Image (cartoon, rainbow over all chains, first blue to last red; front, side):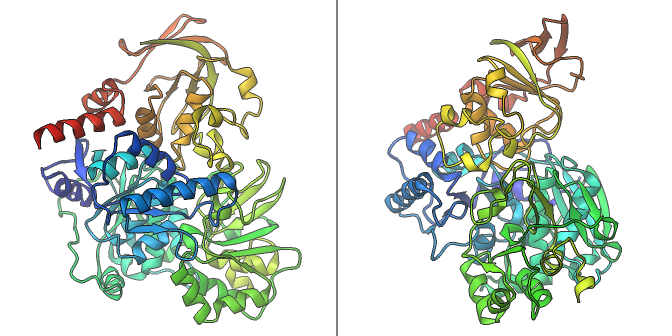
Length: 419
Length: 169
């Protein structure tokens, strides 16, 4: 019987042949924590005794959620992580000035590579599947223990094949693809599964589209969302100076427990209405929905191509009076590129606020919290009750193109309506 | 291990933002986290519940964020166990890792009502609704996880491994 990508990556990292359903202790290539989950990881690690981490170059501590520190407790947490990183000589510790949103930054640093097995104490760690890695979210204790041993336990997941065909129209992005998928299979449609993306249509999805899609695998329960390696991945890694990576392909007779086909040419602008990512609809079926705030950014859509799309739509216009538009570049690298390309100027001239990179409002942390009954159209990943603020506020998930178009009109708008 | 308490009913897809909202996540102490359990979903929950009560939920309990603060908050508030038709996978790991007893059953739990006295027998793998005198079966833990639970969770599992490794070195 042939193997899926997931089975191959787990077999390699377990030093034995494993298949879907097996429990295994597998070596990990990177262990990631952030400023919310990291303190619990470090507390558990330190209870193990006076020991060193398994590899000071394979641990990333990225303080992105409540930074720049929003209150005293957040500042204490980052201080604790800073001291830990110093004491252990951890190479990849980042805070404001150098920090980006973890899932934007980890690929930029070259820490996510094809064939890698990566765990992170953050549910959106599945983002690096875009680069043909098996990466998955775990808890703080999982990450803390892996910092000591360099491995952790897994149940090798069955795989769910997602075949991509066709070519999308202009402005349709990875966000529309993944919201469509989640709407089709539901928030637990892939619970415990590894999504594996393949098919002739992959060539039409840019690397940033793929990051967005893999990022939201968790919103349908996916343990991972892994893309096949191709010339798009190769080009991205080449630009980072990573040559000839050890990528993984599924065998022709690999066993998938489930499968779905997505035809990119059939996709329209897709949004998720409150209060669940699978509550999706096409924008042309939506009643006029007024919004109070627009957020463009996050680990889902805070990359340079997202900002380019938003700037192209907003350019030479003013955001609707009375609307707050917040743009959060995903990393210092993205911020600088956006600055050099003139995108930041376009946003500010249009009347948008541009923030330093942070997860901020996505999880109701800071930098754009919603009041009672307010509605936000957001390029983030979750629209749960109270996710961005008041329990009676609402979040509608959308692509950067839809969010930018909505910024001009004040209601949820198709980009075609404003261009 | 036998756990007994009043059933506290929750539906499907209870996400970790509902269990403990992000605005409380700068906290790491489980008792403090427990003071804001289900704050937005059931603002009066902490007054209604008693220590030892058992959460009974549908599918995909604990979906969303990876925050270990979620099972910690449930423990910290004094809930003794969570029974559900299914758990989101990161929550499942976290609960085992922090020692929150959780049980999965494929049986239909719809006849359990809020406040019914239920008893969980972990060894026998049964849940009894004492108010209605009805018994349900749990799905047994796979051997690997049973071992993890028996040694007291991932921390002890790791400590034992590190000590064994040091002896062999």
